Length: 143
Image (cartoon, rainbow, N blue to C red; front, top):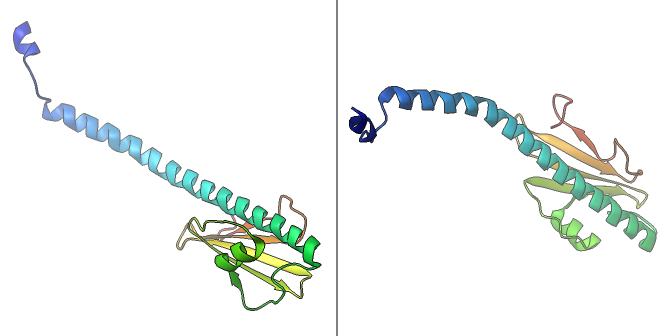
């Protein structure tokens, strides 16, 4: 009897079903938490990049006497931002744009994704604080 038990090399169908159900329940809890954590990390990356743009624009203002970009239109994209402010920001799923008004103000935006996870980060020439950079989305709650 003991030898027959030791020679058994396969799982029963019931054992496999229990494992599949247990893994499914764990995945049901883990996947939504993982998605939220990923979106929070994207937000942190976007905020860090906007803080970097803000700091570089402050240095630009100190050197040239006005913020970049000088004109409200056209919007400047990540290539222009990196070139003018001498940065090396990677998009990381964001679309970055900046606009200014006569060298006295600037606003830079980082747009992330489409659908329910969509949000926008904004930084202005104002001092960095809890609301600069700022995050907005359709539900008023950012990741």
